[in-house]
Length: 286
Ligand code: ZN
Image 1 (spheres, helix red, strand yellow):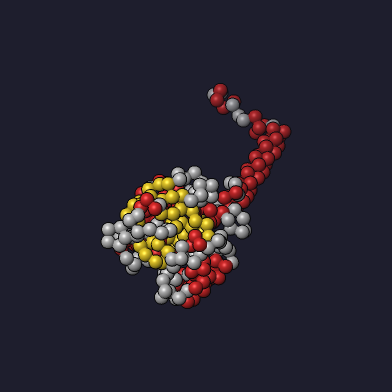
Image 2 (tube, rainbow, N blue to C red; image 1 turned 60 degrees about the horizontal axis):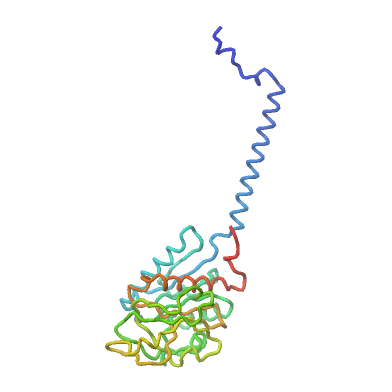
């Protein structure tokens, strides 16, 4: 007889061993099932994505503002790597309606603002009920023809007054290096080429406003064609009555070329999301 034929698995001839194998297989299946269930519950409790942001932008505004929008969308999309958060975008301002924006923890106005009263009302309602907003550059532009008093109040009273031209790099002063948005930044840094707006009144005059970065007086006179000669120019601030930050950066293709400023932008976004009254999503662990 071929010796190999004698090597019959013992279990085939021994009912006791067969039963033990069956039990072990059942246990393994059971443990596997538990592992799958645990993995499932871990995924759902981690709540990824942590939050959802919606960026509004226009492709039909001045070229330098479109250039900024292209870069900003790329910048924020890169931050979603790993599905930490969702960054949706729309170039349709009609999406600024309650049904659409209610599921977002953050709205980013990249280079545009509401086009009609319904969009203004939807935004006001969203912000008055705890919504989050990050606004760049022209998003906050308003003058005597804007006729939107609530928005001026929301900005802390700021009305566009003047700007430098051409766009230039400037020295910025970080007003408070202990605030979560500016913590760890140097006291001053050179911000990349931008068109800088001056506001009158300055939002700093509003006690509800916390200014986080300001144009340094060292820059004056600023400009070659249109010249800012002096005065207070806050460039990043929050109105503490709302979950919002405005950043004046947003003109041209150079905004995201400086690591310090990029860090400020990320910290601003993170802070607006973190102070949601429903809880700080960043405190939830995996
Ligand atoms: Zn501009």
